[in-house]
Image 1 (cartoon, rainbow, N blue to C red):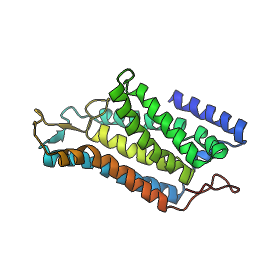
Image 2: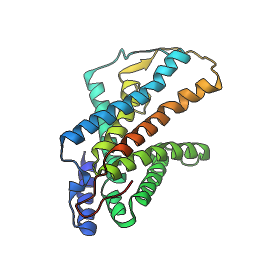
Image 3: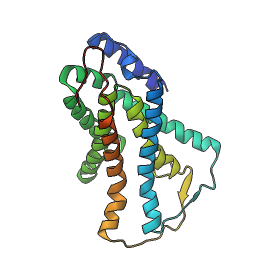
Image 4: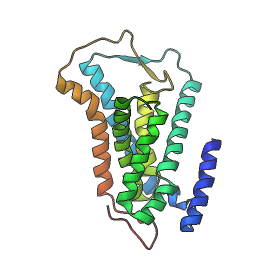
Amino acid sequence: MLGIIVQLLVSWLLLWLFEKKGLEVFGFYPTKKRLAGFALFFIITALCCSSDFIMRMIFARQQWQLNPKLTAGLIFSGLWWNIKSVLFEEFIFRGALMYILIRKLGAIKAIIISSICFGIYHWFSHEVIGNPVQMAITFVVTGTMGLVYAYAYAKTFSLYFPIAIHLGWNLTSSVIFSTGIIGDQLLVPVKPVPEVTVGYFVYFCIVFVPMLSALLINFFMLKRMQQQGADNKKTVSL
Protein backbone atom coordinates (compact mmCIF):
# COMPACT_ATOMS: atom_id res chain seq x y z
CA MET A 1 0.00 0.00 0.00
CA LEU A 2 2.88 2.35 0.79
CA GLY A 3 4.22 1.78 -2.74
CA ILE A 4 0.93 2.91 -4.27
CA ILE A 5 0.89 6.06 -2.12
CA VAL A 6 4.44 6.85 -3.27
CA GLN A 7 3.36 6.28 -6.88
CA LEU A 8 0.51 8.75 -6.50
CA LEU A 9 2.83 11.37 -5.00
CA VAL A 10 5.40 10.92 -7.79
CA SER A 11 2.61 10.99 -10.40
CA TRP A 12 1.25 14.23 -8.99
CA LEU A 13 4.73 15.76 -9.07
CA LEU A 14 5.36 14.73 -12.68
CA LEU A 15 1.97 15.98 -13.83
CA TRP A 16 2.47 19.31 -12.10
CA LEU A 17 5.99 19.79 -13.48
CA PHE A 18 5.19 18.87 -17.10
CA GLU A 19 1.51 19.71 -17.54
CA LYS A 20 0.51 21.84 -14.54
CA LYS A 21 -2.20 19.32 -13.75
CA GLY A 22 -3.06 17.04 -10.85
CA LEU A 23 -4.29 13.49 -10.43
CA GLU A 24 -7.61 14.33 -12.05
CA VAL A 25 -6.05 13.09 -15.31
CA PHE A 26 -6.42 9.56 -13.89
CA GLY A 27 -10.17 9.95 -14.36
CA PHE A 28 -10.92 8.47 -10.94
CA TYR A 29 -14.00 10.58 -10.19
CA PRO A 30 -16.86 8.03 -10.17
CA THR A 31 -19.59 8.72 -12.70
CA LYS A 32 -22.40 6.45 -13.84
CA LYS A 33 -20.70 6.01 -17.20
CA ARG A 34 -17.36 5.06 -15.68
CA LEU A 35 -18.84 2.66 -13.14
CA ALA A 36 -21.05 1.00 -15.75
CA GLY A 37 -18.07 0.78 -18.12
CA PHE A 38 -15.93 -0.76 -15.39
CA ALA A 39 -18.55 -3.44 -14.69
CA LEU A 40 -19.09 -4.19 -18.38
CA PHE A 41 -15.41 -4.51 -19.35
CA PHE A 42 -14.63 -6.49 -16.19
CA ILE A 43 -17.40 -9.03 -16.84
CA ILE A 44 -16.61 -9.45 -20.53
CA THR A 45 -12.89 -9.97 -19.85
CA ALA A 46 -13.64 -12.40 -17.03
CA LEU A 47 -15.90 -14.43 -19.35
CA CYS A 48 -13.22 -14.51 -22.06
CA CYS A 49 -10.67 -15.72 -19.53
CA SER A 50 -13.11 -18.33 -18.18
CA SER A 51 -13.54 -19.78 -21.67
CA ASP A 52 -9.99 -21.15 -21.36
CA PHE A 53 -10.93 -23.31 -18.39
CA ILE A 54 -14.33 -24.24 -19.81
CA MET A 55 -12.66 -25.59 -22.95
CA ARG A 56 -10.19 -27.52 -20.82
CA MET A 57 -13.13 -29.16 -19.06
CA ILE A 58 -14.87 -29.98 -22.34
CA PHE A 59 -11.95 -31.10 -24.49
CA ALA A 60 -9.22 -32.06 -22.01
CA ARG A 61 -11.53 -33.57 -19.34
CA GLN A 62 -10.10 -31.39 -16.62
CA GLN A 63 -12.29 -30.96 -13.56
CA TRP A 64 -12.30 -28.25 -10.92
CA GLN A 65 -13.46 -28.40 -7.34
CA LEU A 66 -13.88 -25.99 -4.47
CA ASN A 67 -10.60 -25.62 -2.61
CA PRO A 68 -10.96 -27.79 0.53
CA LYS A 69 -8.67 -25.40 2.40
CA LEU A 70 -10.65 -22.32 1.35
CA THR A 71 -11.10 -19.57 3.93
CA ALA A 72 -12.40 -16.03 3.76
CA GLY A 73 -8.93 -14.78 4.64
CA LEU A 74 -7.39 -16.72 1.76
CA ILE A 75 -9.79 -15.20 -0.77
CA PHE A 76 -9.38 -11.72 0.69
CA SER A 77 -5.59 -11.95 0.49
CA GLY A 78 -5.84 -13.13 -3.13
CA LEU A 79 -8.20 -10.32 -4.07
CA TRP A 80 -6.09 -7.70 -2.31
CA TRP A 81 -2.86 -8.98 -3.89
CA ASN A 82 -4.39 -8.71 -7.37
CA ILE A 83 -5.89 -5.29 -6.75
CA LYS A 84 -2.57 -3.95 -5.48
CA SER A 85 -0.58 -5.42 -8.36
CA VAL A 86 -3.02 -4.13 -10.99
CA LEU A 87 -3.11 -0.63 -9.48
CA PHE A 88 0.69 -0.60 -9.23
CA GLU A 89 1.08 -1.51 -12.92
CA GLU A 90 -1.68 0.80 -14.14
CA PHE A 91 -0.33 3.80 -12.25
CA ILE A 92 3.09 3.20 -13.84
CA PHE A 93 2.17 2.32 -17.42
CA ARG A 94 -1.20 4.02 -17.97
CA GLY A 95 -1.00 6.85 -15.49
CA ALA A 96 0.90 10.12 -15.39
CA LEU A 97 3.68 9.06 -17.77
CA MET A 98 1.26 7.95 -20.46
CA TYR A 99 -0.77 11.14 -20.12
CA ILE A 100 2.40 13.18 -20.59
CA LEU A 101 3.43 11.03 -23.58
CA ILE A 102 0.03 11.53 -25.20
CA ARG A 103 0.31 15.28 -24.77
CA LYS A 104 3.89 15.39 -26.06
CA LEU A 105 3.99 12.67 -28.75
CA GLY A 106 0.39 11.82 -29.57
CA ALA A 107 -1.81 8.87 -28.66
CA ILE A 108 -0.43 6.27 -31.09
CA LYS A 109 3.22 6.69 -30.07
CA ALA A 110 2.23 6.80 -26.41
CA ILE A 111 0.28 3.54 -26.72
CA ILE A 112 3.20 1.80 -28.45
CA ILE A 113 5.77 3.02 -25.92
CA SER A 114 3.53 2.05 -22.99
CA SER A 115 2.92 -1.48 -24.32
CA ILE A 116 6.63 -2.07 -25.07
CA CYS A 117 7.60 -0.99 -21.57
CA PHE A 118 4.82 -3.17 -20.14
CA GLY A 119 6.14 -6.21 -22.00
CA ILE A 120 9.74 -5.60 -20.90
CA TYR A 121 8.63 -5.07 -17.30
CA HIS A 122 7.16 -8.59 -17.25
CA TRP A 123 10.54 -10.09 -18.11
CA PHE A 124 11.47 -9.14 -14.57
CA SER A 125 8.16 -9.74 -12.80
CA HIS A 126 7.89 -13.21 -14.42
CA GLU A 127 11.60 -13.86 -13.85
CA VAL A 128 12.34 -15.03 -17.40
CA ILE A 129 15.51 -13.01 -18.01
CA GLY A 130 18.08 -15.26 -19.71
CA ASN A 131 15.53 -17.55 -21.37
CA PRO A 132 15.08 -16.16 -24.91
CA VAL A 133 12.02 -18.27 -25.75
CA GLN A 134 10.17 -17.38 -22.56
CA MET A 135 11.23 -13.74 -22.92
CA ALA A 136 9.77 -13.62 -26.43
CA ILE A 137 6.50 -15.28 -25.36
CA THR A 138 6.17 -13.06 -22.30
CA PHE A 139 6.87 -9.90 -24.31
CA VAL A 140 4.33 -10.75 -27.04
CA VAL A 141 1.58 -11.80 -24.63
CA THR A 142 1.92 -9.05 -22.03
CA GLY A 143 2.87 -6.39 -24.59
CA THR A 144 -0.24 -7.17 -26.63
CA MET A 145 -2.43 -7.00 -23.56
CA GLY A 146 -0.66 -3.73 -22.75
CA LEU A 147 -1.78 -2.35 -26.11
CA VAL A 148 -5.42 -2.81 -25.12
CA TYR A 149 -4.89 -1.37 -21.64
CA ALA A 150 -3.12 1.66 -23.11
CA TYR A 151 -5.77 2.10 -25.80
CA ALA A 152 -8.47 1.99 -23.12
CA TYR A 153 -6.83 4.88 -21.27
CA ALA A 154 -6.08 6.90 -24.41
CA LYS A 155 -9.68 6.52 -25.53
CA THR A 156 -11.33 7.41 -22.22
CA PHE A 157 -8.70 9.25 -20.17
CA SER A 158 -9.88 7.23 -17.20
CA LEU A 159 -8.10 4.36 -15.46
CA TYR A 160 -11.45 2.71 -14.74
CA PHE A 161 -11.38 1.00 -18.13
CA PRO A 162 -7.84 -0.45 -18.27
CA ILE A 163 -8.14 -1.47 -14.62
CA ALA A 164 -11.42 -3.27 -15.35
CA ILE A 165 -9.89 -5.26 -18.22
CA HIS A 166 -6.70 -5.97 -16.28
CA LEU A 167 -8.54 -7.08 -13.15
CA GLY A 168 -11.09 -9.11 -15.09
CA TRP A 169 -8.32 -11.28 -16.53
CA ASN A 170 -6.07 -11.50 -13.47
CA LEU A 171 -8.77 -12.21 -10.89
CA THR A 172 -10.38 -14.90 -13.01
CA SER A 173 -7.16 -16.74 -13.76
CA SER A 174 -5.52 -16.46 -10.33
CA VAL A 175 -8.34 -16.21 -7.76
CA ILE A 176 -11.17 -18.19 -9.35
CA PHE A 177 -9.09 -20.85 -11.14
CA SER A 178 -5.89 -20.73 -9.04
CA THR A 179 -3.35 -20.58 -11.89
CA GLY A 180 -1.36 -17.59 -10.66
CA ILE A 181 1.70 -17.31 -8.47
CA ILE A 182 -0.38 -16.76 -5.32
CA GLY A 183 -1.27 -20.46 -5.09
CA ASP A 184 -4.60 -22.23 -4.57
CA GLN A 185 -7.60 -19.97 -4.22
CA LEU A 186 -11.31 -20.59 -4.96
CA LEU A 187 -11.24 -23.52 -7.41
CA VAL A 188 -8.46 -26.08 -7.75
CA PRO A 189 -7.97 -28.84 -10.35
CA VAL A 190 -9.05 -32.33 -9.42
CA LYS A 191 -5.97 -34.56 -9.16
CA PRO A 192 -4.67 -36.38 -11.04
CA VAL A 193 -5.09 -34.07 -14.03
CA PRO A 194 -5.93 -36.33 -17.01
CA GLU A 195 -3.54 -36.49 -19.94
CA VAL A 196 -5.62 -36.17 -23.10
CA THR A 197 -4.43 -35.89 -26.70
CA VAL A 198 -6.30 -33.26 -28.71
CA GLY A 199 -6.04 -32.05 -32.29
CA TYR A 200 -4.12 -28.97 -33.35
CA PHE A 201 -7.30 -26.94 -33.86
CA VAL A 202 -8.62 -27.70 -30.37
CA TYR A 203 -5.19 -26.98 -28.90
CA PHE A 204 -5.10 -23.65 -30.73
CA CYS A 205 -8.55 -22.77 -29.42
CA ILE A 206 -7.66 -23.59 -25.82
CA VAL A 207 -4.34 -21.73 -25.88
CA PHE A 208 -5.15 -18.67 -28.01
CA VAL A 209 -8.90 -18.07 -28.32
CA PRO A 210 -9.51 -16.79 -24.74
CA MET A 211 -6.85 -14.08 -24.98
CA LEU A 212 -7.63 -13.21 -28.60
CA SER A 213 -11.31 -12.88 -27.78
CA ALA A 214 -10.52 -10.64 -24.80
CA LEU A 215 -8.26 -8.45 -26.93
CA LEU A 216 -10.59 -8.14 -29.91
CA ILE A 217 -13.88 -7.74 -28.05
CA ASN A 218 -12.47 -5.10 -25.72
CA PHE A 219 -10.76 -3.29 -28.60
CA PHE A 220 -13.89 -3.04 -30.74
CA MET A 221 -16.02 -2.05 -27.75
CA LEU A 222 -13.56 0.72 -26.95
CA LYS A 223 -13.40 1.79 -30.59
CA ARG A 224 -17.19 2.26 -30.66
CA MET A 225 -17.06 4.53 -27.61
CA GLN A 226 -17.12 8.27 -28.05
CA GLN A 227 -13.63 9.73 -27.76
CA GLN A 228 -13.03 11.62 -24.55
CA GLY A 229 -10.46 14.41 -24.54
CA ALA A 230 -7.51 14.94 -22.24
CA ASP A 231 -8.86 18.41 -21.51
CA ASN A 232 -11.20 20.94 -23.06
CA LYS A 233 -8.63 22.07 -25.61
CA LYS A 234 -7.48 18.81 -27.10
CA THR A 235 -8.93 15.43 -27.98
CA VAL A 236 -7.15 12.39 -29.33
CA SER A 237 -8.49 10.73 -32.46
CA LEU A 238 -8.32 6.93 -32.25
